[in-house]
Length: 283
Image 1: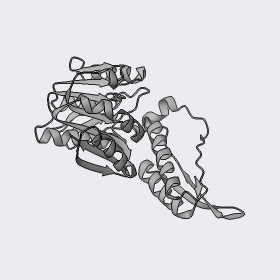
Image 2 (image 1 turned 45 degrees about the vertical axis):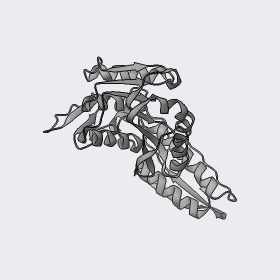
Image 3 (image 1 turned 180 degrees about the vertical axis):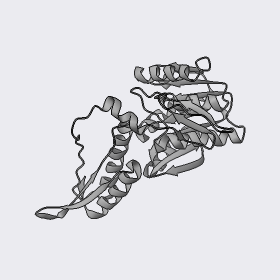
């Protein structure tokens, strides 16, 4: 990204919090008025979501400094066989006090009161590493702790199925996981089988607008734009007294997403944040 120093510092902080990798702020030779920021993203299962997050944050910066010239660009490093190389970055991780997420090639022996969720991402999003997913998983954990998970769950934009599978593992009786991407549906079905949860998790290639059933818990880990667009379809899927968990938005986008759901009759019950990302609980 190229832009004013204030925006450059905000950008550097954001990309570092997202990636944990090195960030460089430098002046452009012969153009001292220009500041350039270079950051690096690993080629992991979360790359697409990270890039989308960077693009949304960049758009927010441009709105904050409308009179400044700013540019954003991405480029690939030297070719590497990423199809296998990225697996080095997906390691077992305790995502809540009681839940460990691990890939099938990294077997884990759970400790006392721990559960293991096996996730093979394939080409879908959701390994439990990204902040937006972690926020949702930790909300599920709190709901379990207070006995409020409910009996049915809908996960919209399911990706690997991680949220639906985790909810069932924690005690939800049945879960419906939907996505418009057939690769995500296939990944969810595969992961349900890996965890012995095929009888309780149903994966569908179906838009939320085509559903008529109500659920005691609804999760939607999407972008702010998608959450706002789908709010009229998501709100009716929530059963009375249930809870809708919306994640995937930046802290700067909380108000617009909250207003979109309030327009559908839902109220903000709680919010949580992590490294610039936000999760809203509505009901």
